[in-house]
Image 1 (tube, helix red, strand yellow):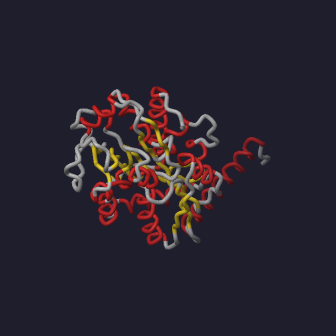
Image 2 (image 1 turned 90 degrees about the horizontal axis):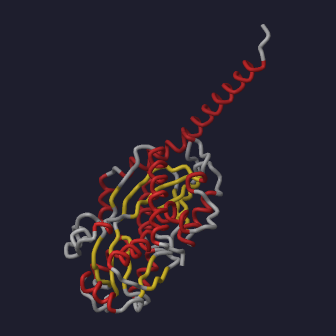
Image 3 (image 1 turned 180 degrees about the vertical axis):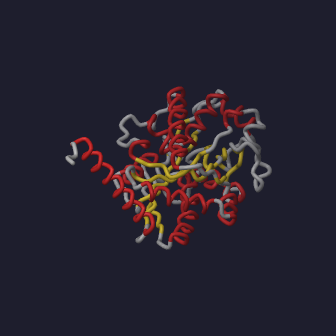
Amino acid sequence: MKITYPIRNNFIRLFFILITGLIGSCLAQDYPTRPIKMVMPFAPGGAGDFIGRILSAKMSEVLGQQVFIENKPGLGGNVGLTLGAKSPPDGYTIVYANIGAVAINPALYTNLNINPLKDFTPITIIADVPSAFVGNADFPPKNVPELITYLRANPNKFNFASPGGGSANRLESEIFMQITGTKMVHVPYKGGGGQAAIGLIGGDAQVMFNTLPSVKQFILSGRVKGYAVTSATRQLDLPNVPTFLELGFPDLVTGSWQGILVPSNTPIPIVNKLFTTITQILEMPDIKERLSGGGVNVMVSKSPESARQFIQSEIQRWGKVVKDSGTTPD
C-alpha cells in the first residue's frame, strides 16, 4: 500500500512528539545531575535574599545537588532577569523574581529588553511579603498622624528611600503621598531593600516603605521607627506597630509577592519536577516557621499555569498603577 504524503507527514510528526516526550521524561527522572544556579536579581540583605537562602538550602537537600545563589542586582531586577532569560533552558538556571521585577518594570521601563511572559516559564509563586513603613530614629514624628501633619507643613523638604525605582515599595510611597496630600523627594537604592535600610539609618532619607524582612530587626532594636505595616493584621512580634487598615488607609494593604521562574522552553517534565519540589518544601512546617519568623507568608500556586495567569494579571494591574501615578524610574 502506498502511503500518501499527508499520512506520512502525520506519522513523522507523531514520531517526533513521542520521542520528545520520552526524552523529556528521562531528563526529569535523572534531573538534576549537577548544581543548579538560582539567579537573585537583588543584593544580599533584602527579602529575596532571606527567602532564597532558606529555599535553596532545602532544595539542595531534597534534590541531592547544590542549589547556589548568584546575586545579580541592578536596574530594579532587570540585570538579573536579563541574565536568566539568556541562560540555557535546561533546568540548571532558575530565577528568583518578585512583583517589582516582573509586574512593575514592564510598565516603568520603556526600553526593557525582556518580556516576563515570553522569556520565562513560571514555576510557582512562593511567598507574599508585607511591607513596613519606617522612619529614621531621629525623625521627630512619632506616629503616622504626626508624620502626615509634619510632611504637609514641609513639602519636598524630606526624602523617602526605596529599594529601586521600579519596586513595589516605591509605588507604596507614591500611593501614600497621593492619599495623604504630602510630597517628598525620592532616593532610590540600586542594592535592594538591605541597602535602602542602611541609607535610612544613616540619615540619607527620613522615611521609607521596605519589605518586613529587610527592616524587622531594625524596628525591634530601635534603630528605625516602625510607623505602620501593610498587612491586614498586626505582626505578632511587632504588636505596637499598627496596620494601615486600622489607621484608615485600606489602599495601603499591600504586599510584595515572590516567585520562581525558568527560561522559556525549559522541558515541561523539568518544570513540573521543580514545581513539585518547591511547593512541597514550602509546606514543610520548619520552613514555614522560619519564613513566618522573618515576616514572610508562604503563598504557592496551584500549578505553573496558574502562576503564569497570576503574573499576567499582576502585570496588567500594576501597569495601570504606574500609568495613573505618573511614576518614572528615577
